[in-house]
Amino acid sequence: MARDWNDLFILPQGADAPDAEAEPEARRGFFRRLRENLTKTRQALGAEIQATLFETLDDETWERLEEALIMADVGATTTAKVVMQLEQEATSGEVEGGEALTARLQELLAQIARGGDEPFEDRIDVTSTPTVIMAVGVNGTGKTTTIGKLAWHLQKELGLSVLLGAADTFRAAAVEQLAGWSERAGCSIVRGPEGADPGSVAFEAVKQGREQGVDVVIIDTAGRLHTQDNLMEELSKVRRVIAKQLEGAPHETLLTVDSTTGQNGLRQAKLFSEAVPVDGIVLTKLDGTAKGGIALAIASELGIPVKLIGVGEALEDLRPFDADDFARALLS
Image (cartoon, rainbow, N blue to C red; front, side, top):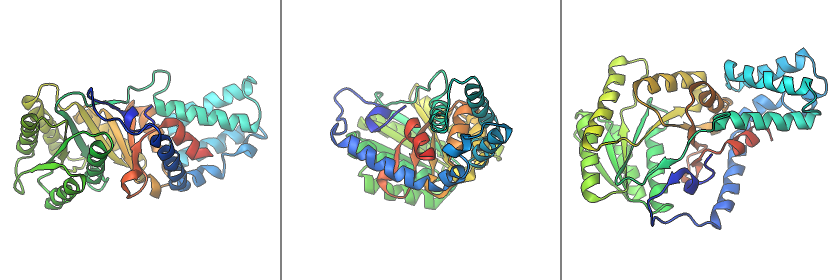
């Protein structure tokens, strides 16, 4: 799994990589913030998951562990797999002692987040010129803000040129918000008039990206309810239009999920992935929820990697997802 920006992206030859010496310190700083911002989820787990939980191994022990994981929105199916595996290893004597069982639990959670026995290919290839990233998601998940932060990191940290396409034409505020982020990130934006066909804006953005030799084009789509079939069909149409402009595009489709919605976020991810191929999840608002376990449910039940997480409002609070850090922050 990606541990930093350089790990997450496969860069064009000659692109500037992040400062190798500065990145470990930045990562340590982010882990501290991650641990702090996962406090609510950890507290939901912490009352049950600690070394003392495993002092006596009986049916009640595994029931309490199961309840704690479900309360953190790890999901019933994923929880059952984890508890069964841990119970088998404890019963066989393979893992003994409270601390060892807690450490093994952490390993199992991290393994699930990485994709299980066949780890995800979670890197984003931006070697095409341009690479087209399509951002999808429900209104209010933080999609437009994520696009702006991602554009900033791509430009400032990785030295890539970025163009934004404001294809969310149904909500004027979304276009203005994206325009504000384009100024902050120092990149261009393509927008159409209010109510314009989203596909035409996306088409023009990719066209200008090709003409200008831009490294990455990020297309913002209308935040749509996953229960509205006609809007989901329109999302598929936008994807088809992009593909007509540039073969192989969009190269990456990122779905933004609000972690505070818990299992509803899992349902959103499932339905969006049925409308368009979803390559990765951006899990936002982890700083305000006790449901951080949703990252594990998405990975386990849908087979879609979480690639980015947001744990705050600052630019540096959008980071590549690291399974080991996440599991450690949940339990430590």
